[in-house]
Image 1 (tube, rainbow, N blue to C red):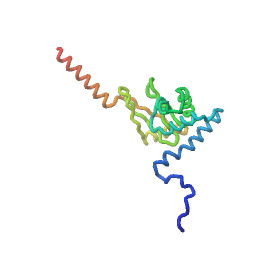
Image 2: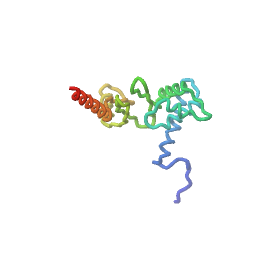
Image 3: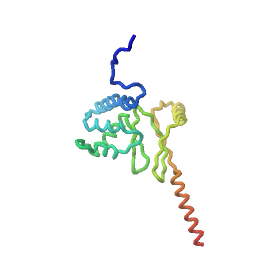
Image 4: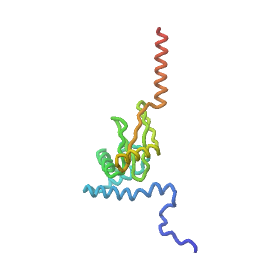
Length: 183
């Protein structure tokens, strides 16, 4: 029997890049609308733009990136709206807020995506995202031991990266050389 017409021709083929980008959007939008409805809040055009901008992000992002991305002609979203909407998105389980230091916090989309853990250099501020199956297994084991059902986790390792170490070693070496020359 010859193949019939496609019933849903607009759905991309499995495995295509557009499928990954478009499939989560509608369920996440519905999820956000349900959250807002439960809070007796409206799904405003500004919140819709924010949701769209956030879902386009991969990896970590700063609130200022969203604000700057929405500063295009015809769009007016205030800094307060960005921060308030990020808070709503966090409460709705769409993003998580990740703190690295007292000066800056970052966000990451978590719904429908694999979450990351982070290795942060305290000297340079460089952040490396990583995933560890062993870490997830340890999380699950700890939860089982205490009767918890794991939902998510955040794991941050703070250290000094190789670039900062080589700079510190160079400075130390220069100090030792000038001390030796002075004696």
